[in-house]
Image 1 (cartoon, rainbow, N blue to C red):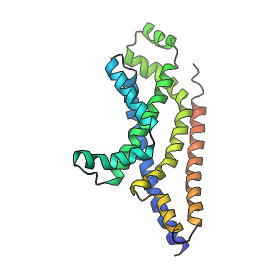
Image 2 (cartoon, helix red, strand yellow):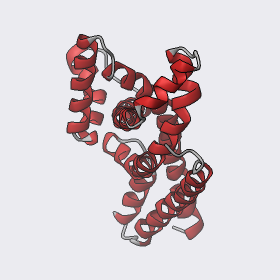
Image 3 (cartoon, one colour):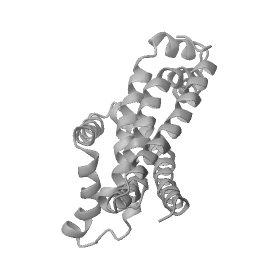
Image 4 (cartoon, helix red, strand yellow):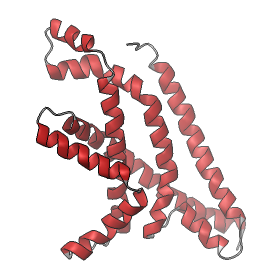
Length: 214
């Protein structure tokens, strides 16, 4: 099998990783904020249920969650999950939304009460205080931990192969089974370059937000 054909198949697999990555971020970032509001709610039943849910998701392996999303609907409710990519996305979005929610919560709770009081003095309501006073300061605080989670997400997309989503590492494993070892190392280069670009991007973003000091 020629180098060009193998490279093309690896690229096709990597596009699946990129698809899982992009769609997970698109949905998990806002969902994480909703979960944060639930866990910080003054309505105790909602707060407790949300915190227990986050604890369960963060305390169990993502691989297990992939299997649960794929098989439980069919085994328990008689409605099999036929689309494995959808199953992977559901598991990834829920998992990362819970991790993001804890990062958001830490960022919000790290803002001094004086910031909220200053907003009240200016006559702003709670929503205005959050979006006009608190939000940008929270973003600056959460960029470092968020960047770590997002880089981890890039690598975790390879777990989609356990439920037969044909991504990059699955393609490399298939070639390794045929006696070709170099595609596995080639796979590492794809992830290293992608994560390198993200690292540079987040570094520049942190510098741009340096003027927010609280």
